[in-house]
Length: 185
Image (cartoon, rainbow, N blue to C red):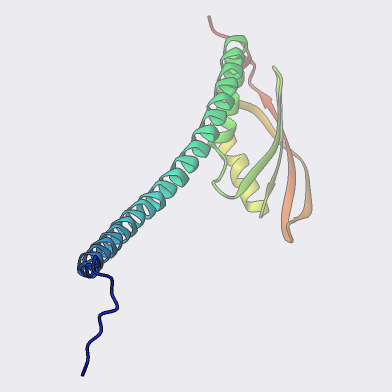
Protein backbone atom coordinates (compact mmCIF):
# COMPACT_ATOMS: atom_id res chain seq x y z
CA UNK A 1 0.00 0.00 0.00
CA UNK A 2 1.29 3.27 -1.07
CA UNK A 3 0.52 6.48 0.60
CA UNK A 4 0.35 9.64 -1.42
CA UNK A 5 0.10 12.97 0.28
CA UNK A 6 -1.84 15.36 -1.91
CA UNK A 7 -1.78 18.18 0.52
CA UNK A 8 0.68 20.89 0.07
CA UNK A 9 3.58 20.92 2.46
CA UNK A 10 2.55 24.21 4.15
CA UNK A 11 -0.88 22.96 4.94
CA UNK A 12 -1.78 22.77 8.57
CA UNK A 13 -4.92 20.91 9.44
CA UNK A 14 -7.65 23.20 10.79
CA UNK A 15 -8.43 22.76 14.35
CA UNK A 16 -11.96 21.97 15.23
CA UNK A 17 -13.19 24.79 17.41
CA UNK A 18 -15.57 23.64 20.04
CA UNK A 19 -18.12 26.36 19.33
CA UNK A 20 -21.04 24.04 19.53
CA UNK A 21 -20.97 23.56 23.29
CA UNK A 22 -20.69 27.25 24.23
CA UNK A 23 -23.24 28.19 21.55
CA UNK A 24 -25.75 25.65 22.79
CA UNK A 25 -25.13 26.77 26.37
CA UNK A 26 -25.58 30.41 25.37
CA UNK A 27 -28.81 29.61 23.50
CA UNK A 28 -30.15 27.66 26.47
CA UNK A 29 -29.32 30.59 28.78
CA UNK A 30 -31.03 33.03 26.38
CA UNK A 31 -34.11 30.79 26.15
CA UNK A 32 -34.24 30.49 29.94
CA UNK A 33 -33.89 34.27 30.25
CA UNK A 34 -36.71 34.78 27.71
CA UNK A 35 -38.94 32.26 29.52
CA UNK A 36 -38.30 33.91 32.90
CA UNK A 37 -38.93 37.35 31.38
CA UNK A 38 -42.17 36.09 29.84
CA UNK A 39 -43.36 34.67 33.18
CA UNK A 40 -42.44 37.90 35.00
CA UNK A 41 -44.28 39.98 32.39
CA UNK A 42 -47.30 37.68 32.60
CA UNK A 43 -47.41 38.05 36.40
CA UNK A 44 -47.10 41.83 36.10
CA UNK A 45 -49.88 41.81 33.48
CA UNK A 46 -52.16 39.90 35.85
CA UNK A 47 -51.36 42.35 38.65
CA UNK A 48 -52.04 45.31 36.39
CA UNK A 49 -55.25 43.72 35.10
CA UNK A 50 -56.46 43.11 38.68
CA UNK A 51 -55.58 46.69 39.61
CA UNK A 52 -57.39 47.96 36.52
CA UNK A 53 -60.52 46.02 37.50
CA UNK A 54 -60.26 47.46 41.02
CA UNK A 55 -59.88 50.98 39.62
CA UNK A 56 -62.89 50.47 37.34
CA UNK A 57 -65.08 49.48 40.29
CA UNK A 58 -63.82 52.51 42.22
CA UNK A 59 -64.60 54.68 39.20
CA UNK A 60 -68.14 53.32 39.09
CA UNK A 61 -68.53 53.99 42.81
CA UNK A 62 -67.22 57.53 42.38
CA UNK A 63 -69.53 58.13 39.41
CA UNK A 64 -72.49 56.90 41.47
CA UNK A 65 -71.40 59.12 44.35
CA UNK A 66 -71.04 62.05 41.96
CA UNK A 67 -74.58 61.49 40.65
CA UNK A 68 -75.89 61.33 44.20
CA UNK A 69 -73.98 64.49 45.06
CA UNK A 70 -75.43 66.33 42.07
CA UNK A 71 -78.92 65.15 43.03
CA UNK A 72 -78.40 66.27 46.61
CA UNK A 73 -77.05 69.64 45.48
CA UNK A 74 -80.12 70.15 43.29
CA UNK A 75 -82.35 69.12 46.20
CA UNK A 76 -80.44 71.50 48.48
CA UNK A 77 -81.05 74.36 46.05
CA UNK A 78 -84.73 73.45 45.82
CA UNK A 79 -85.00 73.37 49.60
CA UNK A 80 -83.21 76.71 49.86
CA UNK A 81 -85.68 78.36 47.51
CA UNK A 82 -88.59 76.76 49.36
CA UNK A 83 -87.23 77.96 52.68
CA UNK A 84 -86.83 81.47 51.30
CA UNK A 85 -90.45 81.42 50.17
CA UNK A 86 -91.62 80.09 53.54
CA UNK A 87 -89.60 82.74 55.39
CA UNK A 88 -91.11 85.47 53.19
CA UNK A 89 -94.61 84.11 53.82
CA UNK A 90 -93.91 83.95 57.56
CA UNK A 91 -92.76 87.55 57.56
CA UNK A 92 -95.80 88.69 55.59
CA UNK A 93 -98.48 86.56 57.23
CA UNK A 94 -97.59 84.23 60.12
CA UNK A 95 -101.25 83.27 60.58
CA UNK A 96 -101.31 81.68 57.14
CA UNK A 97 -98.54 79.25 58.13
CA UNK A 98 -100.42 78.38 61.31
CA UNK A 99 -103.57 77.69 59.26
CA UNK A 100 -101.70 75.47 56.81
CA UNK A 101 -100.04 73.64 59.68
CA UNK A 102 -103.41 73.01 61.36
CA UNK A 103 -104.92 71.79 58.09
CA UNK A 104 -102.09 69.40 57.27
CA UNK A 105 -101.56 68.05 60.79
CA UNK A 106 -105.19 66.90 61.03
CA UNK A 107 -105.21 64.87 57.81
CA UNK A 108 -105.79 61.15 58.46
CA UNK A 109 -102.57 59.50 57.28
CA UNK A 110 -102.68 57.67 53.96
CA UNK A 111 -106.43 58.23 53.71
CA UNK A 112 -106.78 61.78 52.37
CA UNK A 113 -104.60 63.36 49.70
CA UNK A 114 -104.76 67.12 49.16
CA UNK A 115 -104.58 68.45 45.62
CA UNK A 116 -105.07 72.16 46.12
CA UNK A 117 -105.07 74.60 49.01
CA UNK A 118 -106.17 78.23 48.53
CA UNK A 119 -105.87 80.63 51.45
CA UNK A 120 -106.76 84.24 52.04
CA UNK A 121 -107.40 86.27 55.17
CA UNK A 122 -110.93 84.98 55.85
CA UNK A 123 -111.35 81.64 54.06
CA UNK A 124 -109.45 78.53 53.04
CA UNK A 125 -110.53 76.23 50.22
CA UNK A 126 -109.28 72.67 50.04
CA UNK A 127 -109.56 70.20 47.17
CA UNK A 128 -108.52 66.62 47.74
CA UNK A 129 -109.19 62.91 47.30
CA UNK A 130 -110.15 60.18 49.69
CA UNK A 131 -111.08 56.51 49.51
CA UNK A 132 -114.21 56.90 51.64
CA UNK A 133 -116.68 59.45 52.97
CA UNK A 134 -115.85 58.32 56.52
CA UNK A 135 -112.28 59.54 56.07
CA UNK A 136 -113.55 62.94 54.91
CA UNK A 137 -115.92 63.11 57.89
CA UNK A 138 -113.06 62.22 60.25
CA UNK A 139 -110.95 64.97 58.71
CA UNK A 140 -113.73 67.54 59.15
CA UNK A 141 -114.27 66.47 62.78
CA UNK A 142 -110.52 66.77 63.45
CA UNK A 143 -110.53 70.30 62.03
CA UNK A 144 -113.60 71.26 64.10
CA UNK A 145 -111.95 69.98 67.29
CA UNK A 146 -109.09 72.44 66.86
CA UNK A 147 -111.48 75.42 67.33
CA UNK A 148 -109.14 77.29 65.03
CA UNK A 149 -111.85 77.72 62.39
CA UNK A 150 -115.34 79.25 62.62
CA UNK A 151 -117.13 77.10 60.05
CA UNK A 152 -116.21 74.13 57.85
CA UNK A 153 -118.42 73.32 54.87
CA UNK A 154 -118.23 70.33 52.57
CA UNK A 155 -119.05 72.01 49.26
CA UNK A 156 -118.90 69.09 46.86
CA UNK A 157 -118.08 65.39 46.57
CA UNK A 158 -117.65 63.49 43.36
CA UNK A 159 -116.54 59.91 42.65
CA UNK A 160 -113.58 59.72 40.27
CA UNK A 161 -111.29 56.97 38.99
CA UNK A 162 -107.57 57.49 39.44
CA UNK A 163 -105.31 54.72 38.16
CA UNK A 164 -108.24 52.25 38.06
CA UNK A 165 -109.14 52.93 41.67
CA UNK A 166 -112.24 54.75 42.90
CA UNK A 167 -111.66 57.89 44.91
CA UNK A 168 -113.97 60.56 46.26
CA UNK A 169 -112.97 64.01 45.11
CA UNK A 170 -114.04 66.64 47.66
CA UNK A 171 -114.04 70.41 48.15
CA UNK A 172 -114.04 72.04 51.57
CA UNK A 173 -114.58 75.68 52.41
CA UNK A 174 -113.25 76.77 55.79
CA UNK A 175 -114.04 80.13 57.36
CA UNK A 176 -111.53 81.36 59.91
CA UNK A 177 -112.30 82.81 63.31
CA UNK A 178 -112.17 86.60 63.41
CA UNK A 179 -109.66 86.70 66.25
CA UNK A 180 -107.37 84.31 64.30
CA UNK A 181 -107.21 86.77 61.40
CA UNK A 182 -105.56 89.52 63.38
CA UNK A 183 -101.77 89.29 63.46
CA UNK A 184 -100.21 89.64 66.88
CA UNK A 185 -97.35 92.11 67.36
